[in-house]
Image (tube, rainbow, N blue to C red):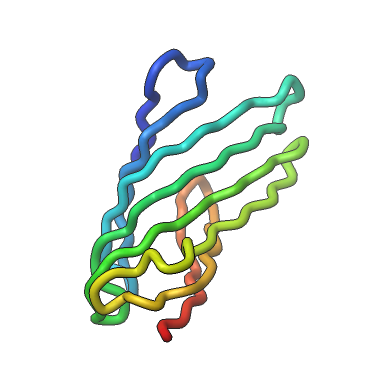
Length: 115
């Protein structure tokens, strides 16, 4: 994952470039807004990213919406497929993604359905 600041650092705007590997073989591009709290370990962010690639062999794209809050190191995060954003063979996708961070590395669990 690559986050690139946009504008002044205090603006908290960043662009997102990601690669997914596994059942989801894809790349994504998106935008993120973040705010840091005055207390260490407190922050919040929102983001939208467009994912393009294959999911279990089905080709297409969809959008993910992120909403995250950290309160003194305790994280709450929601990453949800934006309704009706699926294209190609991913039309009708719905679901949620869990981001797992271990030793600074990100991995994902994706619970989805395609109707």
